Image (cartoon, rainbow, N blue to C red; front, side, top):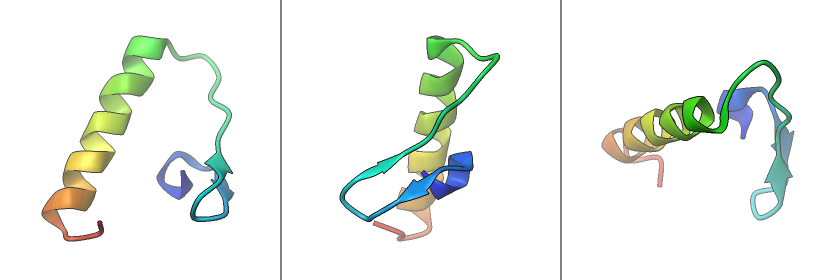
Length: 42
């Protein structure tokens, strides 16, 4: 969640996003996860 400006613990984290749709967040999350996967951050 840090990549979205949120935070928390490794197993329990959260973020609040405003002025965005669920579809936009879904696409942002997919992009972040792909980048993390490609960089070996998993």
